Image 1 (cartoon, helix red, strand yellow):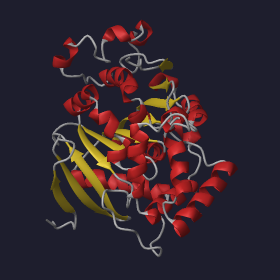
Image 2 (spheres, rainbow, N blue to C red):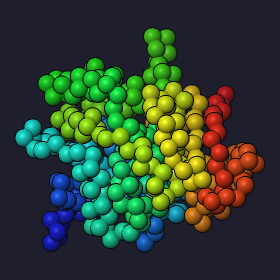
Image 3 (cartoon, rainbow, N blue to C red):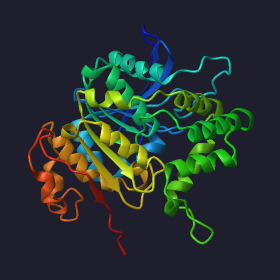
Length: 347
């Protein structure tokens, strides 16, 4: 059904949560937004990493009962897909102008306007984390807080720039070939998850590999080209008006970048969580490691999880599982110090 703003709304039933998909027309093209939950609640917007959408980047986190309950109890979720990354997206024309990261950040502001949203909570992974951070810097009054997973904030190094150029050329001329897929999987997952000659790939890596086959290579090329031209935003981070919670996998290729970003943020309003034995995509590889820090982060905003889950002695959100040092009240409502966390493997 098309309305007067030329935006398309399609009812969908996905993840058994009941969601709607909107195609929102902006000054820089159409953007797919999948909405889950009660739209009268505060908004949490998500933005995935390169070549991913919410199904391949946030599914693990939202499939966790505790995380899903915590987030949907407090928020309506607006999953924003990078242009051309939504399910069933058509290939863009090579003649279409390539958007910059500033254009992508401006698209988010237009999406918020379309839904009538004021200030929102943001959650992004790597490239998506950069776009949301840039959005927070350009539209400071519209961001309540940032939850960033393996984020970027610096311009590409010469090595990254050259590597990205090679991948762009492969995408343009050969599509989503084996070399590109291996490059992306190394970007997302730890070596343990990717397996070896002796150890098979984990289920999440196999699923991601299949989903990458569905991506339109020209659309991925356009997003990667925009990221390869990103400016360094490090010096503006301390001026952010919102609180920030950063997760990074210990084995992420962006681990050093996340540490650099943490050093540039105001320590009174930011916290770092390093997740052991994990790559960049903590949301998929070790989503349970995010639960305790997220809960205490959100408590600083007066948000909480439904009490019915607190009776479970095995709940990852049990207060007994968190260091007393994290419970000291401070500017975030509760003090979050840099910690390392590992999810125990059940035998």
